[in-house]
Length: 118
Image (cartoon, rainbow, N blue to C red):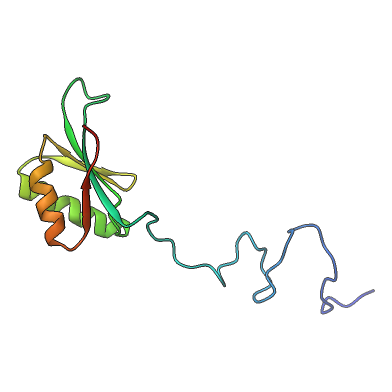
């Protein structure tokens, strides 16, 4: 009977294995960077009415913040505009057309901001 202390030489059970930690490469976190926002560094502000029965909302996308920071920013911007809104999938939605006010506010925070859409 073989000893259980001998390492496995070859196995197809887990696929590729990380050489540092010995875990399957799909669940290894040795060389991975923390997941952060991906984009081109430009915050875009637009207006959208699709799927809202004609009611317009201001859409802010491309903000380089993590999810808790994005929620806090959304709360501050809603308070500044005096209206409601939400944060969904990394996009801040604020009810009504507040593009000009939000453009100035985000530029004050040091981000490069562009208006998009019509």
